[in-house]
Length: 178
Length: 269
Image 1 (tube, chains in turn red, brown):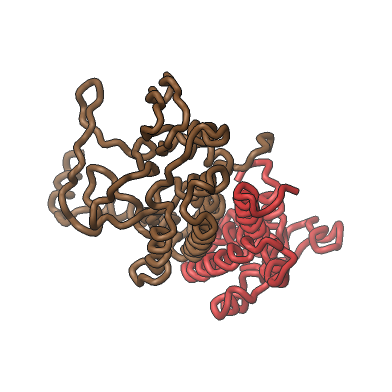
Image 2 (cartoon, rainbow over the protein chains, first blue to last red):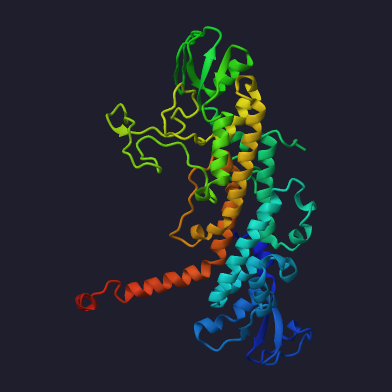
């Protein structure tokens, strides 16, 4: 992940529910009341990069400013749905950068089970993606619904699988160069 | 970003590499020996057979100066047999048919000691040649019994190029073409369904067996497989980190059983 990686930047801007532990003067602008104070116990969705910075006190052992919560995209409900059948969940509607987000979340929270569920999900869906990518019609044939639900990581995976299959077909003379 | 080509190697590059394979031809005209960078080419004297690099053989074939003798595996019967191993054999339900045996290694089927003699470098060091310096695509008059047909590393490239340029030299080219296509589809499906074992490669300490996979199949699957492994690695990164910390802790608390030794060691510091 490089500094100029647009996907990393977009991942960082995804919202995370945070609860303020202290009263902060003049930060009401986050809540939509400019000039006001933010009260302790307020819940606000903050971007990942900001929430991570504000909660850093928790790791240093001093009193922290906010506590973080799991985002709705990684809630218990979603995990249960992924456990039941990974292929039917529309990850894109949960979070456009689902896997990058969960990767960052897993750095912040200790969730052994979530790693298992997500690895399994990624594997199952990758197998499905590979099957769709070898369909010469690309994303237009059947399975368009599944492909619309792919998150950004999976879309890139679909693209490379589709491109290499297409290049090989062109080389073998089965398909024409466009 | 600035480099327009994707990672990996393109199909045309792979087939370019495959043109280094040696094939057998039956020349129709005389040609004096050539001194090429890859080694000398013997003079062509019809009707004696000669072994040439594939690119030169294809050139001569296109100019109607030679006929190419197809390698033994590029025969409908051999391909039929390999296809049967790939599809019907339970042992190879999820694995690829075994590659041709390498010299200096016992074949997995029978554990006989290797019979081939090693080669020697000019300095007198022993070595066994490996592909592409093995004549895996040359025609052979008699095949030792008990040696099953096997697909060499560059099977798809050599097969396709020979079908394209020298289909009149092959036995039943249409049948061969159909079998090659079928084999390719069966094996690609195996590669795709092999995603399940890839987390072994992502979690460290594991590996994935790719024995018998051809060069073109590797080239086609490379970017997808690398993407899946990288994705799994990133999801499992936090777990891996925790595991390493645990291991470091264990090491610090005395990795081996002797607690006594550990205390002794501590005293010295």
